[in-house]
Amino acid sequence: MSNRWWSIEVRDGVLSALRWKDGYGEALLEAALTNGAKRWEWTIMPGGVVLEVAFRETDEWERFRALPVVQAALDATPDPVNGLYVYPGRGGSAASPSKRPKPRPAGAGAAAIPLPVEEIAAARLAEAEPRAEQPLREFAA
Image (cartoon, rainbow, N blue to C red; front, side, top):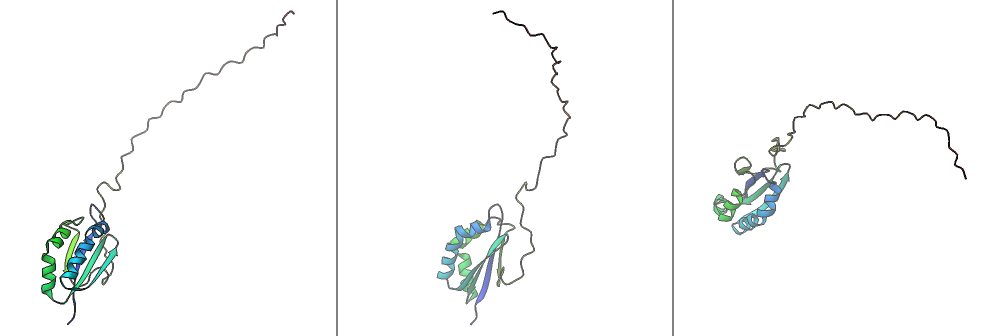
């Protein structure tokens, strides 16, 4: 019987997906292995990570997916609305690289509008008039 692959793809959001992997990766793998996973693979790609897990039966995947630790990890992704994809089959390493642009943090590329610069009149110091030569005085001894 062949393995059935499932993918959990997490994209960068407010935080890095790699940071999410560092925090939840071990717990996800432990849950997968103790619930029948036969193979697994992490793929790090620009803008995200993919966890690919192989189970023999779909029931094993469904049990794994329903675990509280898995639910908590998926709820804690950097962008749970637009940055989490769970789908059957292999993901990030099996297909061509994603063409989705990496999301920009809020305010990225913004700059203040330059203010007009008023020309400041240059102040000039008054030049001293050359001194007229004065005769040297001799002191009597």
